[in-house]
Length: 595
Image (cartoon, rainbow, N blue to C red):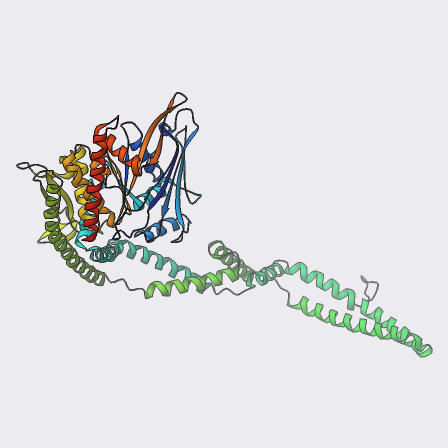
C-alpha cells in the first residue's frame, strides 16, 4: 500500500499493447506510487518500455509489428487529476485543437503498420509525431542505461540545477530582459537600412503627391475634354452642317433655293388652321399644337444660328486639350483607373507621408536604450549565476552523499560553470560573454566515480548500471524540482548487488512522494518495494511465443519474489526469504511514512 503522504493521483493509469513484438495482447494497470515490472530474461519487460516510448512519440519501425500481423497498436491512458504539469499539457493540446478537462482522461494511441508508417492520436484526434513527442516529454521521463538519459544533456542539467536552486522566477525575468535587449539590438542593426528605405519611400511619395497635386484633376474632366476636342477637331464641318440646318428652317427662297425655309411654311400652315378655327372650334387644339411646334422650331433656329456663329477652328486650344488628355492618361497608368481613384490615392499617400515624417528615429536614443537594457540584463544574469553557483555546491554535497548511500563508493561530484566568448554578448569582468534566454552560464555535471579518479563530464564517465544509479541519485535529490509526473527506470539495477538493492529500492520508493515510478527490475530487494507488482509472463501457444502480463498479489507475489531469489522450482526456503523481505520492506515503508 502507499503511505498517506503519497497524495498524488494516478498518472499513467493503463497501457494497452497489441501485436507489438512478442506481446500479442495485454493491458497493464498502474497505480500511483511505485510500480515494478519483473519477469525472466526475454519475457518482454523492456518491450513494455519500447511500447510506452512509441506511444509517447519515439521513433518506430515495422520491426515492432508482431510477425504475421498487419499492424501494432499501443494505447496509454493518463489520469490528469492533480497533475503538476496539467497547464503545460493543456497548452500543448490546445495547439492541435484538443481540449481536455481536469477530470477527463488523456488517451494517447499509436498505430504502426508493416510499412513502418504510424498514426498518432490524442483522444481520438490525429496529431503529428512531433506534437506527440512534445506531449510525451511533459508526461513521462524514461531512463535507460545509455546516453539517451535526459540528465546527460547539458540543457537538462541546467534546468534541473535551476529547479533545485529555486530560481525559475529569476530565469523567466532574465528571459524577458533578454528579449527586450534583443529587440533594441535588432533595431540598431536595422537602423541604417531603415533610414535609407524610409528616405527613399518619402522621396517617392512626395514626388507622387506633388505630381497629383499639380495636375489638379477634377472628376469627369476627361470626358468633358474629349467632347470639346471632338467639337474643335470638326469645327468646319459642324459650322457648315449647322448653317444648312438653319437655312432649312429659316431661309428665304432664292435663285438656288426654290422653296422658303421650314419656319415660313409652318407659319403658313398656322394661319390656315387659324382660319379653320374661326369656322370650326372643334380643331382649336390642333391650332394650339401647331403654335407650340412653331415656338420650339423658332427656339431651335435661334440656337443653331448662335451655335454656327461661335464655332471656329482653334488649333492652340486643340493642342492644349490633347496635352491635358495625355497627362490624364499618364496619371491613370501610374495611380488609378480613373480620376476619382487618382485623387483618393493622393489622399492616402499624403497620410503616409505625414506618418513617416512624424516618426522619430534617433540613433543616440536607441543607443542609450540599448545600454540601459544591457545593464539591466547583465545585473540579472550575474544575480542568477551567483544563485546557481551557491546551489551547485549544495547539490554536489548531496549527490556525493546519495552516491555513498547507494554503495557506489566514495565518488566526487561537481557542477562546473563555463562562459562562451562572444563579442556581441555581455561584458562580464572585462570579457565579452555569450548570453541567451537561460543566462550566461554553461553548466556541466562532472563525476569521478571512484577515489583518485579525475573528474570528467557525466556523459563520458558513467555507463551501464553505474549511470542508472547515478541518475537515480540525482532524481532522488531533484524529485521535488522535477515536474515530470511519471518516471520510468529500465533495469536500473544492472550491476547492483543484493546489498545495494535495498538502498536502491528505498530511493525509488522515496521518489513516489511527488511522482509515479515505474521500474523494470531483476532484484527482489527492489521489486519488494512496489505498490503494484506486474509480472511479464512468456508462454508458448500454437507454436509461437507470446508475452502477457499479470498483477502479482498475495501468494503469487511471494512466489514471484522467491523465483527472483533462486529461480525454479520455488523452494520453501526461497518463499520464506520472500516473505521476510516483504515484511521488512513494509516495516521500513511504514516508518518512512511516519517521519
